[in-house]
Amino acid sequence: MSDLAETILGRIRDVPDYPKPGVVFKDITPLLGDHGAFAAVVDALADGLEVDKVVGIEARGFILAAPVAYTAGAGFVPIRKKGKLPAAAHAASYDLEYGSAVIEVHRDAFAPGDRVLIVDDVLATGGTARAAVELVGRAGAEVVAVSVLMELAFLKGRERLSGVDVRALVVV
Image 1: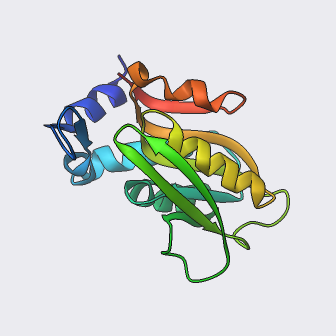
Image 2: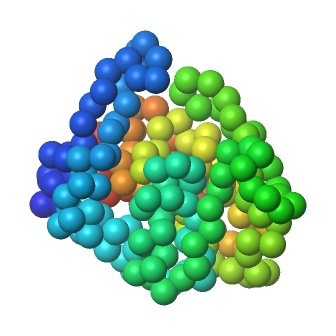
Image 3: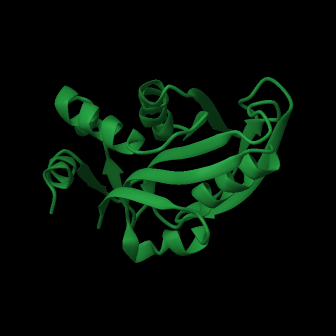
C-alpha cells in the first residue's frame, strides 16, 4: 500500500448506520482538517491530466474539485442537486445505495470540446458518477477521467462507468 493510501485510510472515519441502518458512511472531515494530507490528495487527484474544467459533484465533491481545478489551471463547474442552480440546466436522475436523486449542471457550463475531469469523494454504486458523465456529454464536453478519493470496490460502481478512465486514490 502506498504512503498516500495509508495516509488517506488513517484519516477517514467510518460512521455506521448513517444516513440509514446498514450503510457505513465514509467521513472525510478528519482528512480535510489535516493540511498535509489534504494537499497530497488534491495534488494526486490533479496529477497527469490536462483539462479545461473540473466538475465537482455536490457536496463533498466540491471540497475536493475546487482546489483540484486551481492546481490544474482549469475552471471549476459544480454539479448540484435538482433545483439548486439559478440558470437553465441539464438534469439526470440516478440511483444510489440508499435512494434516488436528480443532479443538474448549467447548460452553458462547458464550451464545445472542453476536456473535463469529474471529481468526487467516494465511488460507490457508480450512479452519481454515471449521471455526471451523462450531463457533461449532453453539455457538449468530453470526460477525460473520473477521479475519486476512495472506491468501494464491493459495490461495483466502476462497472457502470465502462469506457471512462476511472482513477481512485484508495480502493477498499
